[in-house]
Length: 157
Ligand code: ZN
Image (tube, rainbow, N blue to C red; front, side):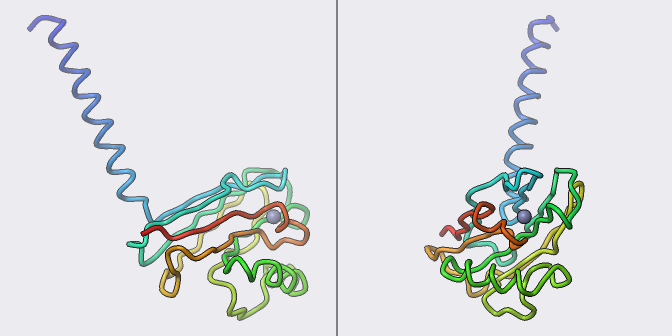
């Protein structure tokens, strides 16, 4: 076999493999979303979308800063857009021991614990009751963070 043919073949194999990896990746992860938060009080994403076919969504949050959770703690809270501010205020009152989320708050669709720099956490929640086209907000309920650390969450048909 000439080296040219071998070279072409190996290129083709590499391309096929990468296509396989890409499609496999997209398929496996469409109901799994992840984002990071940092010491500058920022989430890495401003919008999160999951397909309506997901019955369960898993959200992974990583704090890639270095500050402790008492100073720069972050969590991920999901509510209807209209509930965000009130839930954040009640969360602040609930305090650190409750991860800044009022216990048994029915307006909270899902939330993670508060984490500090270098830590990660995740939450799995059912999409039952969530509707495509509705406006949801995700935010960090650590005191003073929600005004900046927030984004839009939606279900896509
Ligand atoms: Zn935060």
